[in-house]
Amino acid sequence: MTESTVNDERERYADSSDENQLITAKKRLSRINGLVNDMAIQQVVDKLKELELSTKGEKNVLKQRLKGVMKTKIYENFYLQPSKFNPDYYCVIDFEATCEEINPPKYKHEIIEFPALMVNARTLSVESKFHAYCKPVINPKLSTFCINLTGIDQKTIDAADSFKIVFQNFQKWLEDVLGDSSTFVIVTDGPFDITRFLTIQCKLDKIPMPHWAANWTNIKRTFKKFYKFSGQRFPTLANMLEQLQIPHDGRLHSGMDDSKNIVNILCQMVRDGCQIEANECLGQ
Image (cartoon, rainbow, N blue to C red; front, side):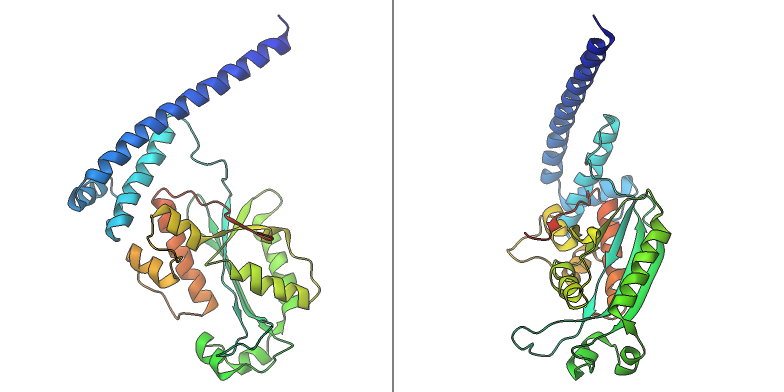
């Protein structure tokens, strides 16, 4: 028997062993999920306290927290990874853009606030921040509705750089923070930051869509799936904070404040055992 044949046999044995472990882990997890489903909410709370986990959140959140954490523990016991997607960082972005109270047909939104928070996926700490305002070209004068909604005044916009310059600065910031080897995924509150605001802006400025915008995490979609959020609609930022019993931080529709709130939701979801994966892509 050649060395190559021996190596092939070892790989097949390893693959078979991993598959058997995964089957066993899933069976054990299924039994635990059944037990959690049958537990009264006070029993869930008591178990979370025993595990020194947060007891804040609505009933469905608390049960899913216990299930998620137990899944992580079981997979760790079997030396399995719950997901093959394990970025080094989450980059949370929440653009603000020009708008009218009633947007006319074919209205072109222009990005006026560009915030980003770089979250270490292991420590869940914010390691770096990027924040800049952008001067719009098509609608350089903000509507009263837009000013009241975002809290961004005309003076701030008049003194801002163009989006093209801000975008270049953001790309440089990414390089400085990530270096040559760190991986990351963009996290947004919904699809429109990428599919609408960034897409329109890049077309206006004749900038190629960046590679990092090809796939990203829509936290609304992740939240709904993980916590079994009922109903057809995706949860709003306020819904997610309410379900997790996390106080709202700052002003709604401030890009940086919204980004901070998304980070708070994201970090609690990771602590609850949620696997953060890219679930949106351009061209869907």
